[in-house]
Image (cartoon, rainbow, N blue to C red):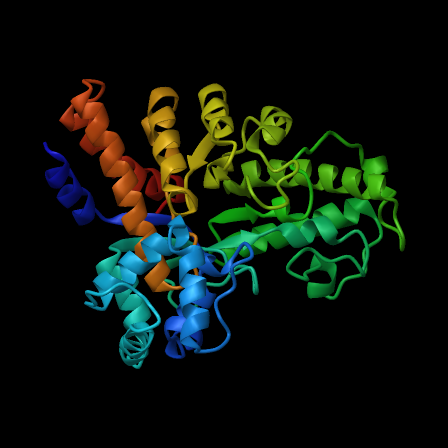
Length: 396
């Protein structure tokens, strides 16, 4: 099997997408080139999309971002989806804009792209702005329930980085830790009954991922008006250990954002004590812990309850994703690796898929050529990471 044959095979395979923030229906109707870029990672990390339409401003911005993986794969996606031969520039800006706007006049265009162009059979959806939603498309989107707000329910004034507090959201005023953990259990069980299939933790944007052990008494100390930072940490440590037990009991995997975020304390190895204390809980460690990618490989090697979710990584750094996937094939079971786009629009999701296919095809081709993998095993691995692993894990 040469690389071209392998790419054709991979493009034909159905995908269960492990992670997305796909925008609600109405947000897609208004998309143009500027809003597609603004709702993408190209707009991230200090390189905001130009607010005006001045050619000099657009050209300067494109010169700044053009080599970044975020931009490279989104541009490839736009050129492919909209049949545009010329690259995005100040001169072609309006051509891209009209093509995108015209296509999205069909209110189903964004769903068509996901189902037909991306070939997604199911997508795990993290609607952090309203946790646990399926965007009105239950046949395609399977909700993840973001649990960050649980860690900020120690009083009525605390908020996570999305502005949420679970007590405020449910109009509660709980000051006893036992009552609070009972409340958490009922909320998680309720969300599972409503269709949520995984829990999602994005605390790497709020604090270190070093979750120690804490007692009930220590957690109780944070449930006051102005708790000490040390008491808040112990409260959050206690709550995460409790949530891990609930997740195991209800058979709900926990997705955890690793890498980037606050950077300090966001590498996946910080989670090792939590993972070791909870062998019955399934942890999906997301994003390859970039830039500490070997953390993920090491943890999957040692702990059979750890899965590598390489969502986002191929468009963060295609090079890093290539390196990590080689490591994972070396050290991790073939049935514990999954991928997702981690994007807001169908256009960027398609670009993320192109990046993933590029990484997967190159890694498998290189291993076949080196005699480290036979063609049959390469096909098995590809089918597993693209569809079967996530489908089995989530009971889809």
